[in-house]
Length: 167
Image (cartoon, rainbow, N blue to C red; front, side, top):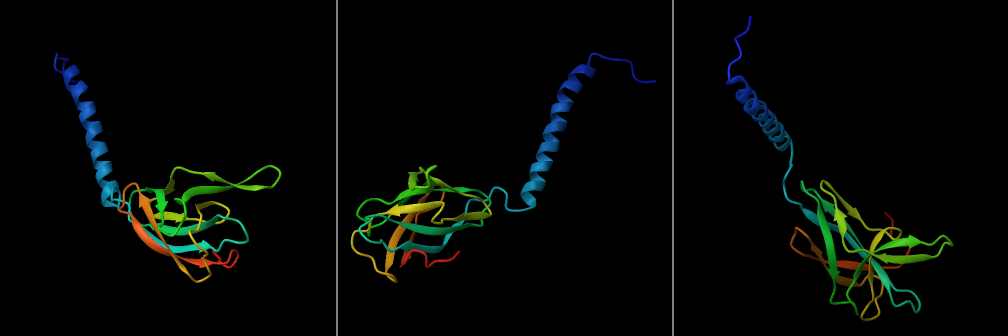
C-alpha cells in the first residue's frame, strides 16, 4: 500500500523529471567528450599543393590543394590569395553541361570536415587562377589559404603539366 497522495507529489514530479533528464544529458555529453576529441578546434594542414601550367592561349588554369583536418571540428576554406596571379584566385567547382562541355562554377567557400579533410581535383573543387607571368613546370607559386577558424596558411604550389599528377 502506497502513501496517500499529498499536495507535494505533483510539484516533486514536475521538478524531478526535468532534473533527471538534465542529469542524463550531462552524463552523455561528458562521456562523448571524454571518449575522443569532441569539441576541439579544427587543425587544418596543407599536405599537397600543385598548379597546372597554362596551355596555349588559355589565360586561366587551376591550382589544387590537399587539406588534412585532424581536429575535432570542421573548418571552411573561405578564400585563396596569391601575389603571383594577375587577379584574385577563385574557389570553383568543375561542372559539365548536358552536351558534355565543361565549365567552372564559382563557390563561396568549401567545407574541410573534422577528422578528414578535402582533396581538390580537376573534376571537383579547385582554385581558378590567372598567372601574372608565364609559369614553367617545376616553378613554385605562392598561395595563402584563408579559413573561417584557423589562421591563414601560406604554401608554395609546384607548377606541373596537366595530366602528370596522380592521386
